[in-house]
Length: 465
Image 1 (cartoon, rainbow, N blue to C red):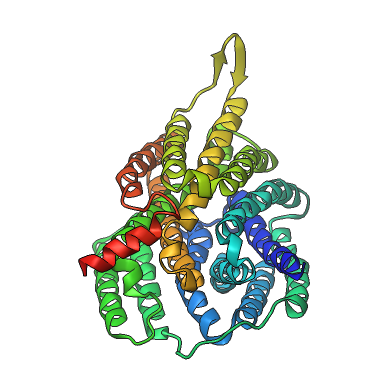
Image 2: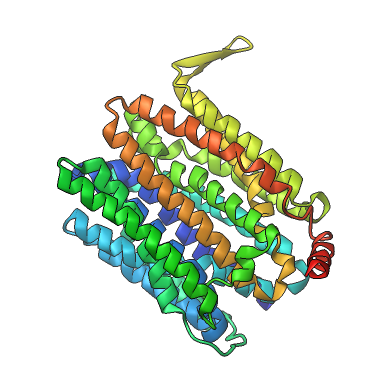
């Protein structure tokens, strides 16, 4: 029975992250206008969190192995809660961005640590337990936009950060009593590798942001140097990881064909989903003229569809395998992106007139179903190749998703800031992401069909060596 309480505590933490992530998206237009910031600068409020969370994920998985899942999990909760407090009292946009940096360290650590803790508690039902995490996020994504929209409307945007503090305290206390210390292994943290990777992403996004706001030749030169620095740092990172005794990313997880396919898939998935959905409230407000409260409500159908689809997919994942859910989910996401790209005043379906708002609700529901079908399979694909390293694999997978989301936010901010017609800018983003998402289809066939095929794939790989 205790393991179910552990699952509940971990789920509460993931729920907190999901609520926070969607609430900030709803508050984003208000934050931008309240500080009088450009869209490129304000975009850092979203992208800096994604960026730091990207680096934190693989590092947290390794920290959990070395220091124990319980201690690392509780430290992550503390950092996230302190970061939320600093966000709530931010006097300017720069301070808010710095506070989101701190918040991202804690927030990015939860998923790999949670996956490792649950995998230890449910060794015989690992796939279903990890898959059900996918249905935890939509619950928070239902609560977050609606609660966030109401709180921003009633109390201002700072209230969404104050809300995190009591929930973080409750989760911290529960973790102290319920979580087990777990096994520890020898090793040390690869801080050099983490710094190189974070620096590369930071330089890349700074370069893109600089290009969007460049007004003279020197600004363009600085932006170009930042992009070159990004490439140099990522090359240095790969070389360092190959030589390090305790790398944050095991190169085997990067070099093996199934892992390569899974990582690229998750990178593009993150770009199309996590990055894009951060801007849906802005899309609803700027293109469809909705209020902040209405823009939060528009995300609810996506979350409902994702929760229902991910729950069903998680239950039948061992029977269906990984490929078909990922293929069906990918096609559905592509369709929803294309429909979003077509701004419509409404549509007549079988004599029933749907307004533009109702049509947007239907499209959001469709996108949620696609995400819910694809995500459990994408989360579990290839994990059985190295079942003893669930936290590490989940951390690397999350890192690729967050990287995709971070770059997507930066590119989207750049496009929207420099295109006068906001509706046209969003159309370019939606159709572009749909085209990129189509590229993931062949990657699905490079991964094993299901958990029953993974031992065979591993044996075949060993024979080739």
